[in-house]
Length: 89
Image 1 (cartoon, rainbow, N blue to C red):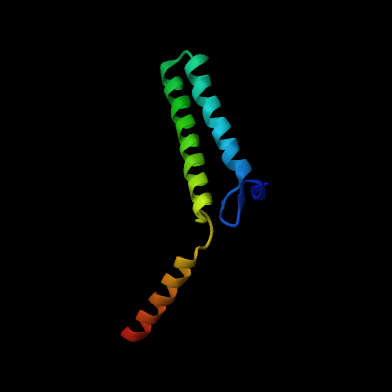
Image 2: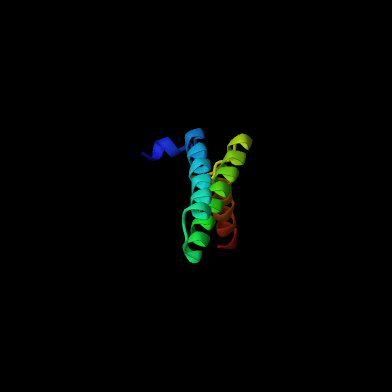
């Protein structure tokens, strides 16, 4: 199930599209069909969060960045930390 949404540390195109659709539906649904003020704000906020996640995920995918998983800079950072510890001792 996760491989549909995340592959090689970034969102798939399907996941980005799904977040866009869910975000728009949450915003539209909360503004049109929910009468309670607090639930309306909650639905609108969740919709905006889904749209922001889709936007950031799409931008990261276009740039080739990996949002999830082990990145190259993390492994490089760990090698520097081990070298500095050896010099101190």
